[in-house]
Image 1: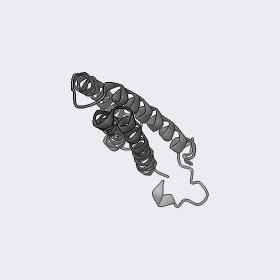
Image 2: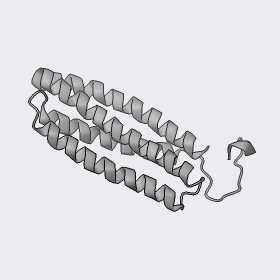
Image 3: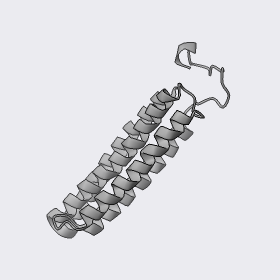
Image 4: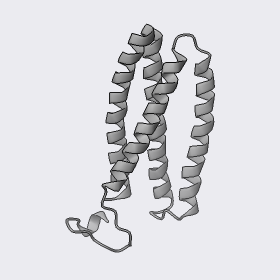
Length: 148
């Protein structure tokens, strides 16, 4: 399994988990505070998935820029730069959304936390179940040499 395949699998599984969280949180938010609660849940889950997706994109871009070497400065620069930009944009969005009256801030906060935790757990589960070799130039059983 290549890095791109692994990251794509993590994004797909993360999208499924985030969609489930969005449906549950939107229902819960609608029961708690009607339309503002539902909107807070949908915005929160969307923001959580955006953060998950940007992390995956930065890893793919960094891996390509570093020519497949995760120790290349280009890889670290792209991944860490994206994380820093995500952090600044996330704070700006959260502070802006905190002042909006059309959504429930508590539901928004809880949904963002749930989405981010689920995304982290999903990433760990996908990576733990992958068959990535610890050494280079090794072909695992069932893989062809072209995919390594």
